[in-house]
Length: 457
View 1: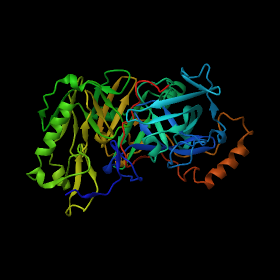
View 2 (view 1 turned 135 degrees about the horizontal axis):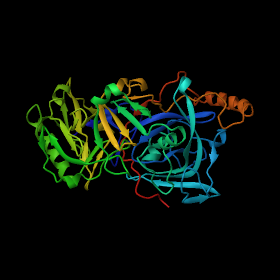
View 3 (view 1 turned 45 degrees about the horizontal axis):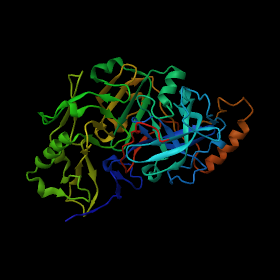
View 4 (view 1 turned 90 degrees about the vertical axis):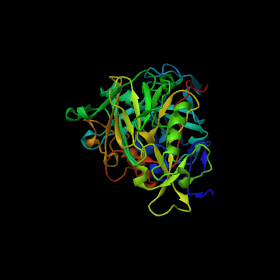
């Protein structure tokens, strides 16, 4: 029969519920960062499929309950409203309310967000290399769908190009323009944590270990996938079905065109290391979820899945650990076994989405300047800025500095800043004790966070 699953109900393909801190149950990756002066901590989904950075506004009555208190631009000395006329950074103001620029974004999984646009300081680095830079911040007054129900406060888009009616620059765009940072970044995901670093240069001594694949178009981090193979055997799918293969950290799973998905599903459900697959099948409430009870040794005996790209002689190899995910069930399986499911789903149309789950256990380098993506195996659970393949990088900081803001006249606002900082500390928003890069944490939820083609008007 169907066992009781020890996990929250799923909305669409969403695993919504409490913080798990474990990607084995799958979800998004989020970073805790500091915004404003004095700063407040906000946990943002890191999304390579969209460009907007947005958090719930303190005045929002139609936002969900999230991990941290809402962003209050009135308490930040460096927050500035974005007017409707001649917005900075080559932006477009397609919505205007009370002489302030607004935004409305729709995402492919159905969520919508709306609000007012500000600019404010975001904190980066630590120690002698700590700094702030002015970024575009959406202050949400309306949320629907997964945005309203998620634990994370908001989203930080770091897409390949500006998108939507606002054409908001990403944090990477701003650092490249204002700090002349190298136009490159990297992320490294493990089951529970990860690392995001910005800028820097590939360490020469590690260049030979990198597997580079050229990007195929400007709008997304898109690769020209030409074949997929399981155990070295090609799916035999017309390569045109793979058109527009994108890297999207805001999506959890691997999404495949119908023909390719059926091939992978058939391989996973008919070639089990223990023999007859049906003897270990675990039926869930979802008809498109294919799961079996297995040991780690048995999991690792499933065939590897390889992805082959134009412009690269080396394939991207996904091990069974990376193209499956674990669910916790009741009654529990026999000792030494867990229930694992295929981490791939039918995209219902042509195109491939490489979500966060299948990008685990390797550092992924997105070289925007040279239009290429690099892959290298890495121990992402232990990754730190100094272990990244990118030397001289920076990172989003979850420590809010106590110094007078750069935009404030010296000596003018410091007393007020200190008073506010003390108040913020009392409400647990103030800086953490030690300066360190903001960790990515995996929560119990999955969603496709790519922005739709146009902003909602």
